[in-house]
Image (tube, rainbow, N blue to C red):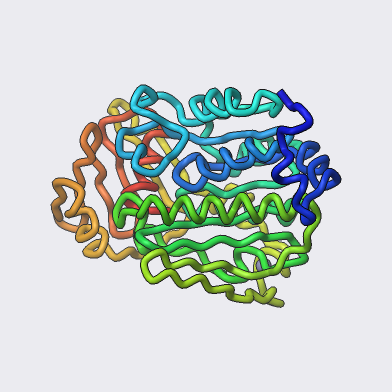
Length: 336
Ligand SMILES: [Zn+2]
């Protein structure tokens, strides 16, 4: 239903108006990752009347997601997030064309996943996907909105290739696996992740109606209530947007996932090969479940699967033969 009153509360805004609304309605937006940030931003964009939404996520709903991922409820546990989110938002706004794609996005399929897309909202749970998205965005001139939230802090930035700094302008090298806390190891305050998802939806709407991007990283501290705007300059030596390197799109640097012959085990080999802080990884995991050091590896019991983490960032995920499930566990507990 798209009656004349449906978007009145935003078309009366001088910043949007009927002209802005028709731009919003003509746009195709992909939301990559449907966690805390992605469910909030996708919900707001569907309500704002984005013409076509493509919702992409590799994971299924877990009970501990319900604390912050606003499109899911208890009856959705174990169901693919992309499908649940699409079903829910079709009921919210039947005039939006909504696709749910339950895929793991990587170098080999990102181009087809983003086919026909005008803007991307980043709801990813791992750095590798952001670096990959950054390269595709530069190659295609595709605007995207970065977002991240951890503990009581969040960040967001609208990135327009060749206009603003790109993701690698402010993070030139991908952090080593295990060196950053993840939502699963550090936790997140649900109001903070919702703020960041809302900031991303606002940045997306501004870009869609043609407002020039500010080139600023928004940094929000949900405990002290500080909101900072940090100007991020384009780097003249940026490997991605200045030198045009495509390290992540070129599959050579991509994470390699391989099923182990004859056992329910998947091997994950991270893109970045370098020693990781195993003691730090072990300390973070200790709060989440049984973990032990065995020689030079750390073994973590993640319930129905066991992760064996090596000092070079490699991991074996035992108890599953599903590569996507293994990648997902790796991103959650080691971080990539
Ligand atoms: Zn750059």
